[in-house]
Amino acid sequence: MSESSNRARESVAALTAAGTARTARALIFFPAVSVLLAVTAVAGVAIGSTGISWDTVTRVITAKILPAGWVDLAGIPEADQVIVWLIRMPRVVVAGLAGAALAVAGAQLQGVFRNPLAEPSVIGVSQGAALGAVIAFITDLTARSALWLPLAAFAGAFLALFAVHLIATRAGRTPVATLLLAGIALGAMISACTSLLISLSFVNWEVAAEIVFWMMGGLDSRTWTHVWICLPLVTIGVLISLWYSRDLDLLLLGEETSKSLGVDAESVKRTILTTAALLAGAAVAVSGIVGFVGLVVPHAIRLVLGPSHRKLLPASVLTGACFLIACDLLARTANPPTEIRLGIVTATFGAPFFLYLLRNRHKEIGYF
Image (cartoon, rainbow, N blue to C red; front, side, top):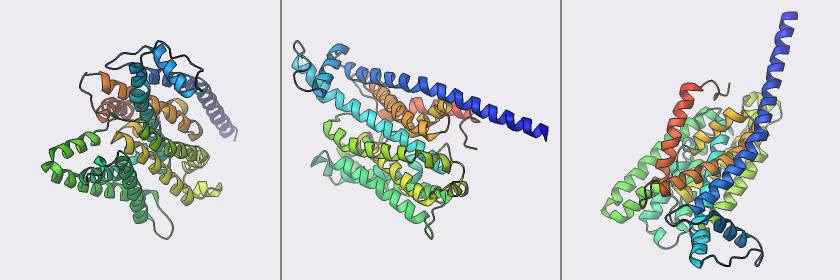
């Protein structure tokens, strides 16, 4: 009896020490990543084919945000103001929003599936968005308005989620394993349809090239219109995610255990899946297919802060935004004047890091 009591005390002490260490790390992590995000964002605006000083960047941005007359723009050429506010700033904001959305969506899905390999593609959302975008290109909707491409991609993402959920649900229940298998199968079928449409479109080389470039991901020619398309959806998705962070933590204990603690598992799963689709669809709609953000960023944060979604989700917002802004900056500047596609850059950094996690830290990224 004494020996078991000692073991229990040691376990409690170990858990308490781990919790204290994670809290201490969080107190350092959030301010550090916030500062890094601000620096990365300013660098993303300042660095480019035309170099602009950081002082000019900060003055122009604050002048646009604050009421007129609060910041003096005297001495700053009109051309520099246009570059900062109308060309580079929207691109940086879209990169930040897309990165935050993909990272939070990945963290949510990993929690729901209790699987460290989960990301938006496992429920067919990314494939559905790609199919919607390809249809918009082929039907020439993109030539009519810049809004058609993101709207078509977003619609495709939600239709794919609806189909996967409909297939996996029986008698009001949606088993996680069935949902995962349905997502993989339907995602493969949607990808096949997308590939078929792309192959048929090669008779029109210009359209085919646009499709291929979009499928590789990229933020070229992004404007404030894309920001306003993405911003409300990402904001709503992140707020809902944070609201359900406690339920996500309880789902990690298993559906039966979470039910005994007062969680309506089916309702929570539906809400989280819809929110993840909202976030991923919004990101893909404005950035194209960008891989590894939703897979790698939550892993990296979990190693530092632990599995609690109350810390993991807000940290994913900051880290995902910072990561994608930095990747986009590298894509623009690594090989001027040619721009590397954003999906190539994220895969170049994300894949080796994920392999490192699997090779050396596999015990730390599990859920059991």
